[in-house]
Image 1 (spheres, rainbow, N blue to C red):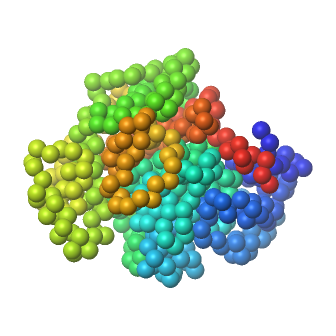
Image 2: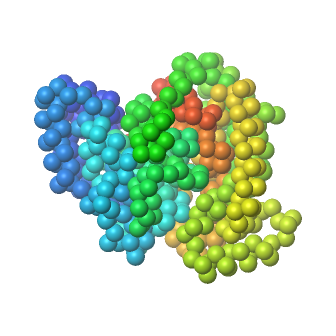
Image 3: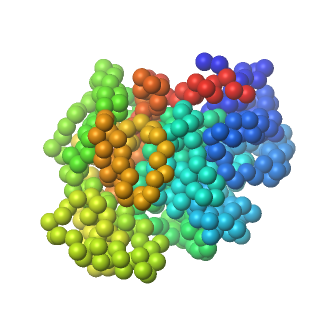
Length: 499
């Protein structure tokens, strides 16, 4: 595999944060040189990928010079001199925040999101923002402002959504770290589609201040289901960056609370108790994904891990998916106009009580009154208890990130009429895509996406590792062990030799 190296064998395209920091500390490369190389690569390659849609190169050059001065003084910070990208909805002072909506094209926040402030305090150099679908509500990444992002593995395919620009940027070698968000698989699916790593943190672990639909003020608070988290090309980089951005908001919970995540449950693969799930009662898993998971399970078993393929302790996945669909649209409902809300409530009222389809549950979620939401939340609390019991028997669940590898672009409208081809049979697009976000999203559990292999045609295949609430270090540690034993990130062949 051809890589672009400096004279001191520093991989400037695909080096990990740890490797780049080592080179920076040893003065084998300067922060300004690393940034210049990254900018040149973006300018050379991103015309056909379209991942970095808001560029902040001039301020990044200033930050790199400041980082070089700090490094020269012997300063050491977790991300000092490292180029980083962010998903478009994160507020960065002086840059647009649109969420893909044309009517917000000119909105510029006055201050950085808290996550952005923490990255800068750790020495990160913000180089730009990555593309998204409009309103973050698709498994592709395109909008009328910035156009479509293409998958670096095959340009005619989706990089995933809604953090698709971040996944594509990482696969293309546009910096070693990007920060995404996830309410419905929006970190996990792009990681799977683009062959990179991603971590959906436990709910509430990373603060959301400054991650809000314009023109809302950046107030502290915790939404329902939605989280923000890191995407990278190694599990160790996920761990490092999570340490930088996690922790309570200093202006809210941080007044009285401090973060103290438990250590990983195990350090050795043979000590892990893993349940492998490759099917779902309500949706088929494509053969490319299912067979890859099966081979991973066999390798894990041979490595000494205690692997099970079924468990009576596993919560009911069908009931959980129905609950998730309802909660998902309830969480998204504040964006509805009064007319759209009235229409949604009318559709829900016309449903038969016996209709338990995923589409029906989403329809019910749009227009729930608070009393109904509280009952739904109570059901979630019961489900969370069942998962807590389950994780006394197992340490982690390996689960599909999506039913299929990256699929071809489909911008057809209406959205609800789209279908997804799973091994030659068409299924409702929203059902087939959103269903895999549950149960980690529903119950606020950590989930780490890790690449495991590629299809015969060369597309990446990944899985998500779901773990116990606030045991994020366990899922990242298991991802790292899988990476070490069975591979990990590999650059797209067409980009391996690109400068």
